[in-house]
Length: 497
Image 1 (spheres, helix red, strand yellow):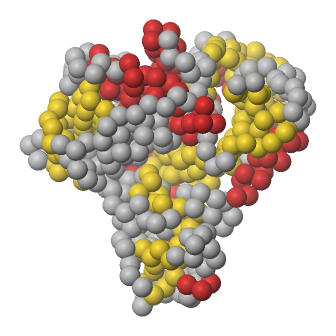
Image 2 (image 1 turned 90 degrees about the horizontal axis):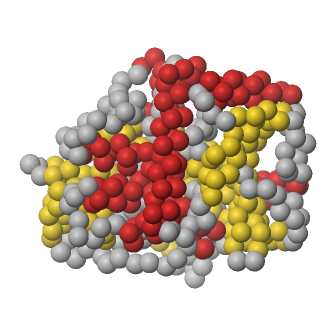
Image 3 (image 1 turned 90 degrees about the vertical axis):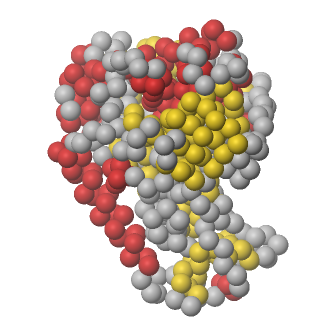
């Protein structure tokens, strides 16, 4: 099933759609962990808030994440240390640790049923080639006061060369947590609307957010949309990637709770357990790639299944899903006021979005209430770091420039609609224009412009997710053209045959 196990196991809740014109102090766009946590904290402090979610609460990236919470980062703390400083890496670890603590506090306070528990985190190498990576992380973690231990075996059926263990990290069901927290938000100070996609923000004296059936006028706006909606210079320092996950139901056996990261060079898998009803599951995640830049997206699911069956007694692969993340040029997220006055952003979380999403809400709550936050300068959205960003900035933007070459004649995937099978999409050139053509299971053809409505890049057909994905800045569209996620506001333009 192409659905995350978190969404399948989470409780059902619903909020109304916006169908009126209203005013508020702060409007939040996005109902994932960042937006909902920010709404909760701001409403608790007495601010008037409106939250607008295009789909359903936790129905996006938060509900498709790993369900892991930790002080570590996917690029390793020692990389942050080498690029920035020991002090910066220490503050990253401390700030992320405080975010995990807040999640635990809110779970306990509101008795949120989301399977939250403290677990150890492991990073391991299967060969001596990666031992130095482990050694560097041991040195860094120890320096930052994290409870670490060096190991040479794991409570898994995997032979390892060396490993590090850090206690006190956490796991939960992120979809259940976000839904549960949304229900606990002070409704006298915050109104939540689902199925209320924002398609335009008018930047006047106040900010006017337009949806299909209503508007919200606000003094401040938080774009809790994983990447800012619209066009921002910052997007040249954000690089969109996708990662894949499976949940395999086990015939027998289980392994101790924990977050297990493999340093394998070509796939970088991570593993964890989850219990749903009477069944034990192992979750295997990995295989990231640039959005819209693959020929065979399904191969990532096949590789994850191969890894799961290599180590465990698998009965069936019951859930498959993927999620998007945005890598920042200098290794740290961008949190705070954007280049547009009164619009605040939280982006560049890489694959550490659950923890960084909570941390973003904490920082934004302080900023919008005029309080000093100890981490706001560290993650400042308007920072300029050319030396630290240069290598990634040049490499990734050369990659983006290459994608625009798809506009050249002769770059279409098919010459006619007849070449497209049912359930498949292809880019077809029609009268010197690129069309995104999808043929549904009934043989009906759906035609849209293949030009992304964000910044005019040509989209790519994703055969695994049945979507049109932009390889430049990560906008994604349904097979029939509607926006799924990313910086684009508008659907792909319709074309008539």
